[in-house]
Amino acid sequence: MQAKERFLPRFSPNPDAFGSATEKFARFMGTPSFLVWMTIFCIVWILWNTIAPEPVRFDSAALGFTALTLMLSLQASYAAPLLLLAQNRQDDRDRVSVAEDRQRAERNLSDTEYLTRELAALRIALRDVATRDYVRSELRSVLEELIETSDGEEIRLRSKSKKKDRDPQTTTIKQIKPKKKDQEDDAAASVTQEKSGSASVNEAPAVQQDSVSKPKGDTV
Image (cartoon, rainbow, N blue to C red; front, top):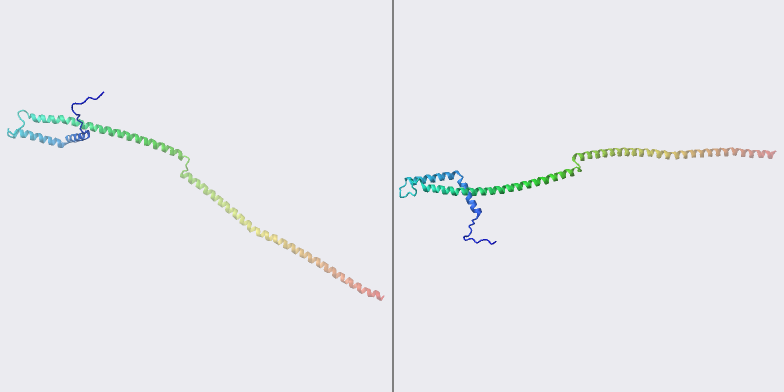
């Protein structure tokens, strides 16, 4: 369906500019200054049409200030739509702020859910991670083992040093033993020499006797 052509052009003022102007006027109508200025305007209107000369008057007091009544009713008739327009704009702003608050709450909820999941994952991961107390206990145990091994190493080194101190004595003893054997051999050799010397001495007198006895035989 084709759109019908309008006889008069559509009047479409800028809603933002018109709405901001009406809101300003509506806010001013709700202030005490508006009431004061409205009261002053009504008092001046009434006094002017009562005290002023008749040719200058524009509203008859005998008719009950009809023009003033029309002005106040016109102002009230325009004030009601202006207030409704301001209220509608305020409702729109409230609706937008509520939507933004809802979106912000949803984002906060999603962020908190993400953080809770991450914290749960970190807790699960930290079960296998060494804590400070665990590391301290392990270091203490390692230190105790090192102390024990160092003590054992010192004891082993001391025992080795003692063995080394004893080894020279055994070597001297081993070296002394052959010397004693050599002395014994030397003593045995000297004994044999003495025996051989004594035998030669015994044999020598026998020879002398034989030599002495032979001349006697010759003489005989």
